[in-house]
Image (cartoon, rainbow, N blue to C red):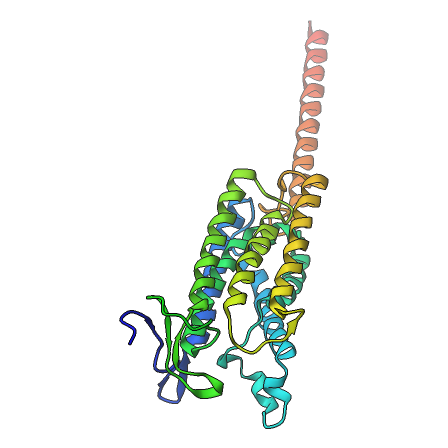
Length: 316
């Protein structure tokens, strides 16, 4: 009998009348709010406008959720489309199943659309939001705890996770709490990105690339501990290969970007002081008109002085 362990919740949902309140959904929602809050603070510190991060998130978050679900369903299609399965379950996102790779990829597309509509460079926005995404992942992983899923191998460590459910092929016992490992790792990634960004003034997407690379390192060894069903290629789980490839791409981006575009963007959001480019143009026009009016008034004053002098000379 284990003397110390992490207990699993007896259920992942409570009902408020007819309304189900799911722990998994709450973790995702809280994570999104934290990401937007921190991203907004970082965006303002870089010279951006209040509310821009939230406005772009209106595009990024739905795209991210869709991408995360698509990645999960495609890579684990047998859970929904094999014999005896109900394909309708593929739409039940609240039961768990979001792939971070798809969430980031399609979320980036949504962010690009939002940034393009406001004339903002996507890399600058990505740098601002990067540590917030890591914290959102850290919080979101606790949704797996509520669902008693994504745990690792059996262990007798004092922080073992006690799985009590026997549904969907689960075997009650004590396992590595990989959800906790990844949650703590993501907190460390967020701290690393914030520190490195302040220390080295990362710009042009390099802070985001650092987040991606450092997350992949942790995901690789944590994925190795997991025992849930997964596709294998050359002895490694699919997500191990994905983490490896994405890590290499992120490192290459950091190196190449640092050489081609060193430093950080001086302007991240155009016309911060005005609502749009027309405001700045109107202000310039008004200044020019004022200067012209002042010059005309000065010329009129000189003409009046000349006339007065001429009249005085005649009288003399």
